[in-house]
Image 1: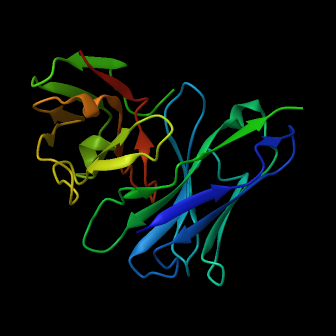
Image 2: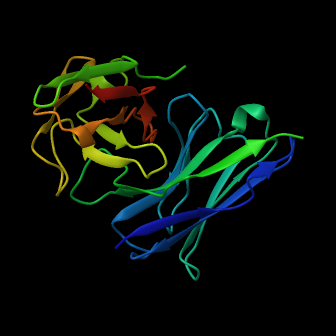
Length: 123
Length: 111
């Protein structure tokens, strides 16, 4: 059964870099059939797509975050990573790791999600 | 401010139906048949309920159905059950490799 598990610091200081890892089990992050990515939800607000990538391609980013975000894949560890630099309180959110099918199914829906991890930006 | 507009809440009694709307623009919902809906019980992983406007993943009950007209998509839950009480989010592909614009969510309450 597919599982996505987010991990990383729960508290980050303003102006520093938020770094999270998603460990994938039950599927290969090198799958030709999927994108992998991140979505976040600030407290009391809606969902925001951060970015997605194919294991051997270039990432696609939300234009509103593109200047600060980096998403990468480590195929040897079956992990996805997120780095968001120059964080402010507005980056406080639950961060979710996601999978998107790209074969057969169109429209890039997010068919599996991790349970999410809360990251608070505060000094 | 979310890109897609959803009502903050909806409710119905067990066995009744509830419909949630999701309004976007011609650049997202109106431009593509790539609307998806997600069910989220707090503290759990969100679950894909509908994709490509009307399609259900394996295991999703046929009580859940989706539709679209112009720039507005809708999710209908028929035969409401207690376990349907959750937050529901709509999403749409928005072109130019922007894979997901979302609504702010609708809290469905089963009375």
